[in-house]
Amino acid sequence: GIFHAACNALSLAPAQVLHIGDHPEQDVLGAQNAGMPAVWVNRSEQSWAEALAASQAGEYSRSDASLVQKREFFTCAQLTELLDPLKR
Image (spheres, rainbow, N blue to C red):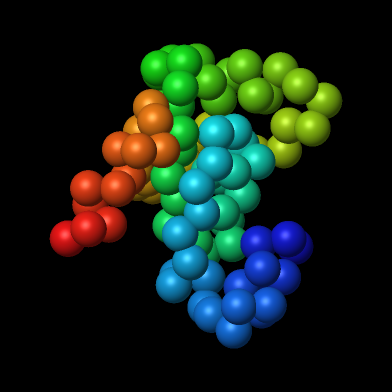
């Protein structure tokens, strides 16, 4: 898939690449299913359950909500929130 293609292009393992995106299913679940850590940019400050349900209402839904409930990911409302941890 696209996540593994990006890793191959960078000559990095999926665990070495941080994926940042705003779509619960396509970004967070997609990255995690590929073995990447993920950051969910939640600008609307929805709960995970609300955002995932909204994404699954679309025709491209293909994930299982129970899968992500067992996984951890970072959440931020603004990309600038990621700067402080990166400076450390």
